[in-house]
Image (cartoon, rainbow, N blue to C red):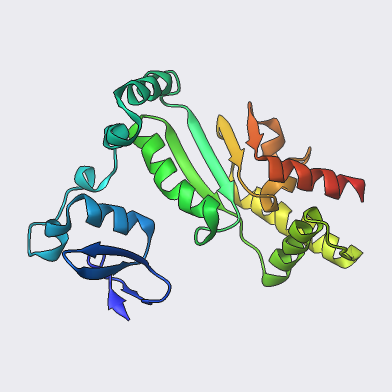
Length: 211
């Protein structure tokens, strides 16, 4: 086990993120801590005053070295039209997987650009996620069997999340199939001005509607 030099969390050396600095490997709990470390290793390896919140947050200007000043300026210009828009991203989990890895920095970056952005993860029992895993497998060609009881559980958990989350935002982005059924005539989510979801979620909706 090792200690994350940025946040101090104890991490498994076989599972955490790593960075090599001056011949030594350092371990991190997340890609966010790894990126902070690589921006200024000395700050996290010596006793220095704590960073302010503004210093911790990555800004759009930090990406200029990778995408160029023209791209950064274009993003800033487009973001101005969306300032004070209230946005929520919804996915299946806060940890693990590509969506969770992207939403962490993305939602922070959107807020630094003046777009009020939140991140919600759907909650449910293990059986719920085993059902949605079967749906994933079906999209890849596997033969599955979903009983009426499991369908009722799926709908019940979705209804709970729709009630719990108070999604009265200007824009809701559905990032995973699991929250997709929250879009139905009985929930507030159906009345939003705009709803977006990924291609994989669109396919899952098609599979469910065919049953």
